[in-house]
Each structure stands twice: as structure tokens, then as C-alpha cells.
Amino acid sequence: MIKIAPSILSANFSKLGEDVKDVERAGADYIHVDVMDGHFVPNLTIGPLVVEALRPVTKLPLDVHLMIENPDVYIPQFAKAGADIISVHVEACPHLHRTIHLIKEQGVKAGIVLNPATPVEMIEPILADVDLVLLMTVNPGFGGQVFIESVLPKIERVAALVRSSNLNIEIEVDGGINSETARRCIAAGANVLVAGSAIYNQKDRTKAISSLRV
Ligand code: DX5
Ligand code: ZN
Image 1 (cartoon, protein in one colour):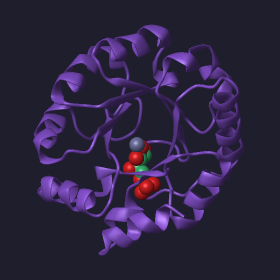
Image 2 (cartoon, rainbow, N blue to C red; image 1 turned 90 degrees about the vertical axis):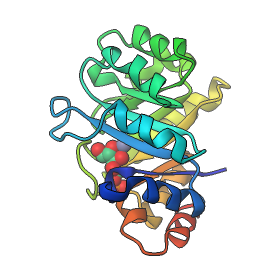
Image 3 (tube, helix red, strand yellow; image 1 turned 135 degrees about the horizontal axis):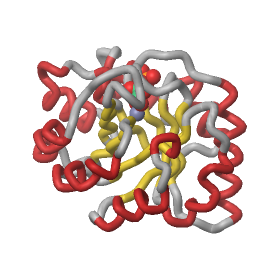
Image 4 (cartoon, helix red, strand yellow; image 1 turned 90 degrees about the horizontal axis):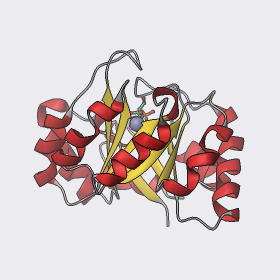
């Protein structure tokens, strides 16, 4: 089953609640929340207050993607605000095992994220402890960027690792996902697709979401 996670980074922030409800009605599976600190990535977005405000607006799991330095400081706040999945970048976590377990101690699913140039080997020692692996298919920071092809073999490698170890782990991709790149990511083994501009820039979001599932 392929899950679609619209990224609210491409939503209209002046009517964020409406834009979240809209993709829920249109068939979304998760709401993807991009948190950026202006240090780990060159952009600033939102914090736990916005997650807290969105919590009563939707029944869908809130999939919180932390693109921040020192995530340990903020993980309890995002969990308390209502996050269902919290994902951290390996590049931002010198004590990754501690960070993943901090997430799980909050009763939240833990995800691990790799930038396009970070090798899959980085996650092997911690793979059995995570619920989700997120492979960035753009360099994080902005919506609307072009898909980086060289990530496709990484998706295949993660899928093979997950299969061979019999783990129940979701494989998510994020960045430059449209109906064409979605098809290639699914073929490589991804089962959760994040899409910002491919959903929010379309008038018919039901159609936009279903076109990504093929
Ligand atoms: C990029 C973010 C993505 C972004 C995806 O740093 O993590 O979630 O919003 O946007 P699109 O789908 O437009 O590439
Ligand atoms: Zn994201």
C-alpha cells in the first residue's frame, strides 16, 4: 500500500487548517510537517506551536520532519504538541542512538533521514530501532526543487536491507516527487511519498494525490 504525505510547506499558511483538511478529504495518508531552523538548512519555517494548532484539525498522523540542529532539545515539545512520527537527520545527530530512543520514549514513531549525499551505511547500526527511513530526493530546505536521480539506488539498498532483516519499516521519499518520479521511487521500494508542490499547486487535489499512487 502506497501512502501519500502532502507537505504543508507548499500550502497557503494564511489558511493552513483549511489546506490540511482539504488534502485529508482528497485522500492523503499523512500530513508532512517540515520544520527548519535556518542553521541545518537555509530556511526557517515552523515550530511546535503550529503542530499543536494543527492537531485538532485532522485525524491523519502528523509526520514531523525535523531539519534542525540539536533536535533533542525540541523532540519532547513536538511530541507533546501531537506529532505521531518524528524524523531526524543523521547529519544533525552525533548521538543518533540516544536521539532515536528519546523519540520512542515520548511514545512517538521514530524516523531517520538521509540527505542525498549521505551513504546508506550510516543507518545500518540503528535500522532495527526505527519505524521509518526517509530518503531525501532533494537537498532539504525548499519546496519545488528537482528530483535527484542518484538517490534511486539508495532506495533499492534500503529496501533490500529492510526485506532481508524482516523489519517492519516504512521507506519514505521527499523532494521533487511528481507522478513520474513517484513511479520510479515506488519501483525502487519506497512506500510513503511526500509531495508538496505536486499536490498544493494543483486545483484538483484528489486527482493530484491519486496520480502519485501509480
Ligand atoms: C524539502 C522538504 C520537502 C518539501 C517537498 O526540504 O523536506 O518536504 O516540502 O516539496 P516538493 O514536493 O515541492 O519538492
Ligand atoms: Zn520534508
